[in-house]
Figure 1 (cartoon, rainbow, N blue to C red):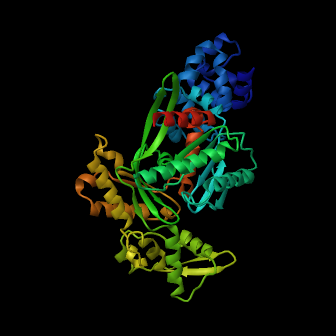
Figure 2: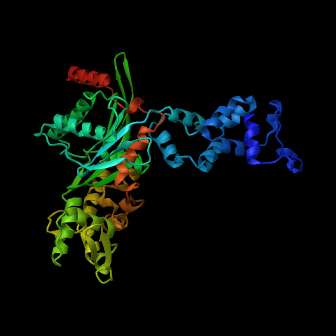
Figure 3: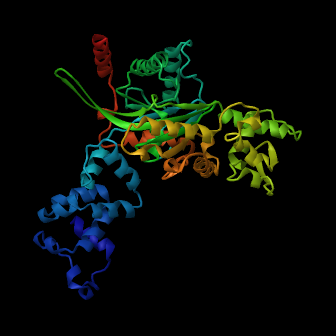
Length: 477
């Protein structure tokens, strides 16, 4: 009856059925369904959609092999279904590259069923300037707010501030902390590989776990922002350039799997995106706040004053860009205007590209620091010298993240500067990727994880597992 209803909706009217090709005729007898051509089957499955198409394999035994195992058919279903929210490229990357448990020949129908059972998660990406939060089943963050927490400030009462921070996020989202797992981003801080820096990172991560578990969150997935940016760019290794609120970090990162076994207790594969701190994390004392302040100084020289930096930031985000050739750009007419609501119309000319230029020439802003391209080149040289892997190509992908990294032309300029600065054996194969999801790239990396068929599973830590880990560490020490 279901097949008949679908077929009649596709080809209305019975009068023309006699004129159709006999090979495409459909009868309602179960045995006759075996001769239904695959193209007609495809039409029916696309009409039904993924959920009902999965149930259809029980209608006829000989169809079961086609419906379950034919990935081409399912790809067609997802691509042609108007209500489909699946990004097949991201799904293939995440399900095959990240867990490293599923084979390339995995059944998409089985994968669809597994992902439909995933409970989803609350995602909180708390950067140094702004926090993005939302629900993993939604295509984008549901809210943003200024970050009122100084991550990594050891002398501050970290636990109480974190508890207040997450409680405020849950209140704004209007969800209970006990309902779903949570994925939180850990800011890239305490850059060194010294014992004090390691202790600071452990303290920050421990405070995050304690604050959330004391709020009765069922499980926590805490991953650093560099790794999330890699996930969003569909990469498993590379150098992440995070242009934060106060400074810029250049961090080489690799995804690795650790199998943790202890006596009779077998823990699952905990997947970690590891920042290669022993290779070296470069830090440039130049961030979004410095660029905004520099633009304000340039406007003040023209007797244009602003009461708030928010107006200047809006001009920066809508008018500024990075020139591919700075000297050549100086001779061009670059005058553009932009209307800021409730503030008026502002015109910018050379300030449009001079603002972003201080990333490469900090001296223009009176800052004594190396340029962004020099920091990335130094990081690449360290990666090459470390010989961590047999293939040097792992560090030749540079992924940009952060709001300021969205400036048009930044990726192209950085790639050009690297080619001019580094020897040929290092520049061959270099690729600079702009933020794949703009300012929300880290949030989307977390969303990719929290919709995996294996989530929460090995990705999350429960309160019981955390206690067992601490107990094991104490015994080991």
